Image (cartoon, rainbow, N blue to C red):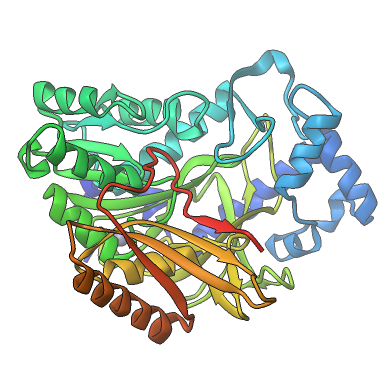
Amino acid sequence: MPMRTSEYLDRKIETATIKEVRKLQEAKLGRELDYLFARSLFYQEKFQAAGLRRKDYRGLRDLAKFPFTTKEELRESQAAHPPLGSHVAADLDDIIRVHSSTGTTGKPSFVGITRRDSKVWTAITARSFYTQGLRKSDIVIHAAGLTMFVAGLSSKDAIESVGAMFVPIGTGASEKAVMAIQLLNATAMHCTPSYATYFAEWVRREAKLDPRELGLKKLFCGAEPGAGIPAVRAKLQEAWGARVTEGLGNADMAPIIFSECTQQSGMHFNAQEYVLPEIIDPESGESLPIEKGVTGELVYTSLERECVPLLRFRTRDRVTVLDTSCPCGRTSFKLRCIGRTDDMLIVLGVNVFPSQIEEMILRCPALAPHYEIEITRPNRLDEIRIVVEARAGLDDPARAAEAALLAGKLKDHIGISAQIHIAACGSLPRSSGKAVHVRDRR
Ligand SMILES: [Zn+2]
């Protein structure tokens, strides 16, 4: 039974049948290809190398004939054709803002947007926040990146477009955030799950308050996986007394593209008329059906992009489709991001995602989700060592017991034998942005 109209920001497209959405996407992809063939030097060269012509696309089933685009190609394109690369298809005069993708080393990788691109980003991002429960009456603390980060100023535009109040705090400003929450009676916060965890600790330690007393009702988490892991969500909801939902975007495609509805059971696809999603086998590149239980790499094709139109862009996000229907009435599929196709660790032949290790840590009541993973190969054999913080002071026997508990869980659930070192509460470095947990020293 679909909910009231007010439960959707864009009722028509959010409740459209899959067939209706596919038809719209099919027509828009044709127009996007016209644009690429006419305007993108980058794609003109790629299509020529692959022997593809515009007439090779007649319908969505022909998309698989077209090559993927990788982040490495975009970096090379920017280096060879400064300032923004040959994949930029708009005139520089028409670009109104430039962002850069986060979490990378070396030179920034720029992403430009035109005025129309900005409107599209605002529409998708607003729909994502609204799906998470953002309403006009909300006062939202933005405790995430604001400078260069794609989901900074774009979140401002989106939250304002819904009519809610945007409070630009930024990262690493916990004191300012507490004050703003209290003085403005804020109702919601947008941040990474790492920061939500860290900030709850900070509030207890420095402000001498229970985070629940701050009265936040909604936490919109994103920029890294975590908030959708049941154990992580439970801890965050308990700490803050707020509903935690997560979102997923991509620096090169749009700030937030998927987000959870209040059912909290996976992130809905929210860019129906703007982005065409695919899930592929990351090894073979084969396109997989979007059905419940399917796991693979998320790939995006923009359907309406002026500055950086991208075809079959490989995100390296490893996702699992959780469902293709939802009690909320939205018809788009739901997924969870379970890691990256390029951060998977192979330890003695076992595939391990850091997020899986984190989940096991959270199942140990005396341990905090602050940890470091170090992998070495001292005698030609992989060894994995995990340093994890205790929630409070533990004596030696308690430490040994907790280490044994975690080691047992890692062995039973993931199949790895790890050395566990329990560190003192607060001893590991904290991150207010993306958490870096892995040191692969092999
Ligand atoms: Zn839903």
